[in-house]
Image 1 (cartoon, rainbow, N blue to C red):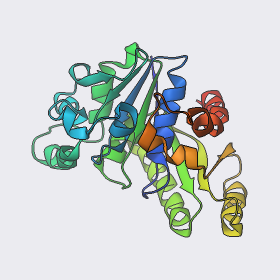
Image 2: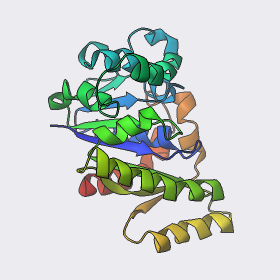
Image 3: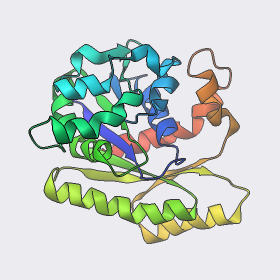
Length: 252
């Protein structure tokens, strides 16, 4: 049965999509992996498939959620990496929940993934930059969450609130959910304030931060352009994440 891992923080620009995409790619070298794009921007879909999100119109995670069955909507990226794609219409998911769905609105994703959970070793969920229904569903379905942190005051302000939200989900819906850790990302090593935030997270959340710290690298940023196939910079883009994946597996 697959371990379900979400990547989240209610702030944009914290490398959720890049990190979840890279982790899904690296895990798929040894394991069977399903990536779930739960953000209506569809960035994870673009990153992993290198296709336009509208190529998947009518065959996305939204339809899977509405039917509570992922099986008809899974798209193969490789033999060992599959994806539930997203497009703009995923933004209508809350309207569906509150006007048509009858049941626990926090558990729709869990029910949807149960239909395929035995087919994968890991399921990686990319969440939107908001504490909305998609994020709550991701946390409610997950065994673990990786909390993203990019070194800024706004992300620091969001961090405590996100941890509080995780606590509410644990209390009310998913007592088995654990925080895998806090991943510090996009760190500009030239800036003293970035270094200060890296150290602050270590001090304020002892034992929660991953040892791996992801620094800002041009090759990683260009993954969105070149993707994972025939990319001459691929090894450079991924090398920092290889240690993180080992840490993540050991924690979950």
